[in-house]
Length: 291
Image (cartoon, rainbow, N blue to C red):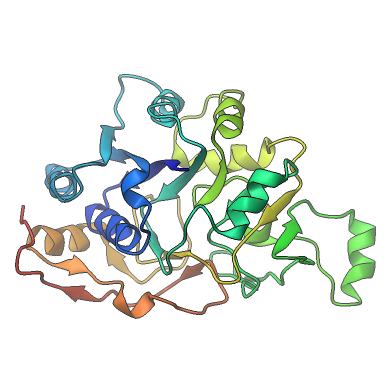
């Protein structure tokens, strides 16, 4: 049992290294995964950073996002590079907090029930706040860590909220995302082929919302989140979400000098939001390659 994965990364070699390190060091099945990275760089210094990550993780396949094909063409080619039982996307700002295996009960539920769309690795019953939107997002009704991601009608929701029962909001609404929701491989690959052409990653999750997987109203999660988004910096001018205030250039300069981001204090973190702002912690391995 294995997973095919496509990671999106832009100007974040240091954070991509952190994602891959936190994942490979905590998930024993990681060597069996088919991991691909679609990376985009806007300066030679970032190219040098990505070369370091390539040398550190030689089994990961890297593909530059260039003009040789459309954005969707790049993504489709990586999704189909190696077929596996399961599939998920990741973004380079994610960090794994806990290990997992594809033999765990959430994955067994995904195998048994066709009405379950995915295992949501980023979610847990603790999640009740959306940091990017500054919204309270209380969990929708759960049973066995399963919930329906589709909202109820407005008038029903108004009544149920009087009793403290809420429809899915914020991150609870994301059936398909780039943050670790894990699907049956063939189902998501075939569905992705039906999506309209878009120009880049910024519009991808909007299309996921507009075009969900059909006949799959449920998601399932672990009692504790497996991974989390670290809002450390921005790489797109359109983004106005809160972040720690650092720049991608500052991170890359330290990475090229041999420093690495640490995730030690994040392991086992109990949290109530999928995105958190933290002050980055750095360390300098003796054998770290430099750029």
